[in-house]
Amino acid sequence: MLTASSDVVAEPEIRALVVEAIAGVDEAFAGLFARAVETGELPAGADPARLGRMAGATIHSLAVRARARTARDELETLIEDAVATMLGPAAAGPPAPSRRGNAPGVERKSERR
Image (cartoon, rainbow, N blue to C red; front, side, top):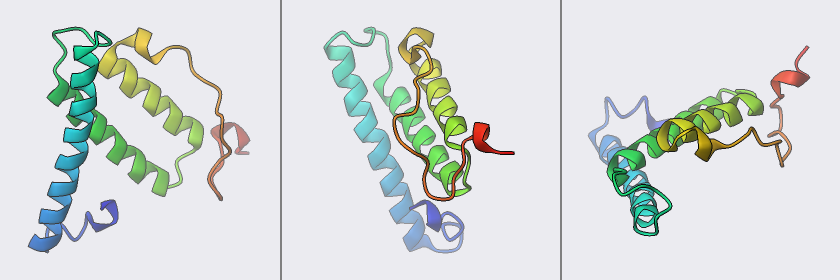
């Protein structure tokens, strides 16, 4: 989907597919957030649709940044920042150590010289 981003402007068929995919991601996240409101994991005043759009936008940004070979620790920081922004600082918790290795060819900032 994101590799098609430059074609979206010129190709209506591609645009329709991308718009549909983005809406699907946002709606899937909104459903998860709605369930979290129902179970009390999120406060009753939380807006599942708004949170879903923010989560979807974060995923798309992460995908673009990962393709640009952004360091894994920078991506993890972005994830923590997004969670803290959407759900509050307590939800993000302390930074977690990475549990997986880097993608091939991707260095952590701490590994760069």
